[in-house]
Length: 267
Image 1: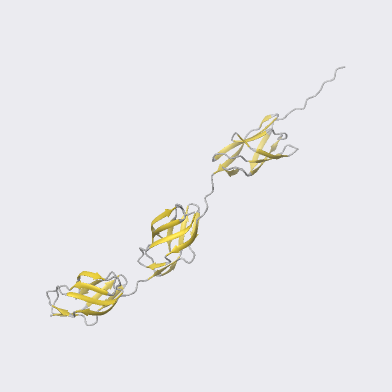
Image 2: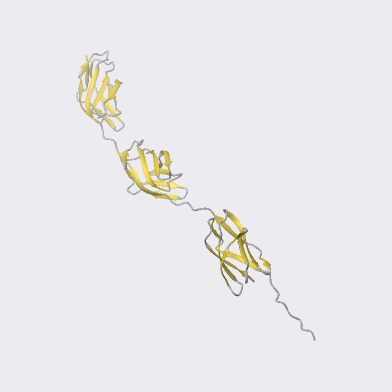
């Protein structure tokens, strides 16, 4: 009587999913594959690229693999056993995650409320950054190698404000912020000469402090040719024509105005 030998029936593997279902394009992360009939897997591929099999569940439900490197995007994961290839599970490769910015230094840390002060920020991961001072964008911001930012401060109210550096990867706040300082009010000590002809044209000298950026009027008419020395203490100009008698002399800067005691007399 003949005896028939029964061969084992091989069942095609079924892959349910990959956990996690995503990872870096550099690969190297551990992925758990879940399914049925996965025992005896001969290969596991991610988008056609072989993965390293770390362990297999003897019951055929689990396989642990190390994901291979691959281009960014979604790829099929396929397990192959002696019974054939599984239906694919989806796995997504993502690119490098950009690091958020960090800031080490802001210089200078103070400046006038009028803005216009060139500044430098030193830090890391600063590429593509924008900068705000008290919520107001800085102008002419330039990135140098992702470690230095240069720019110009906007105008702001007197006092300390937050300085925030923002890139596509996040934001960083500069420790200590930035302090806006109101410009000092001008003061005037004297005018020389104290009188001149009604036709005008008399060169005048005004002595005081904080005169930078000043304009001057005599009796409401503008003094011409105004020049202020670098120390902001000496102002030169030419008196305008006027009416005979005493006229008020007013010096005005972005910070405010001051009136010269005694005025100027047209004769």
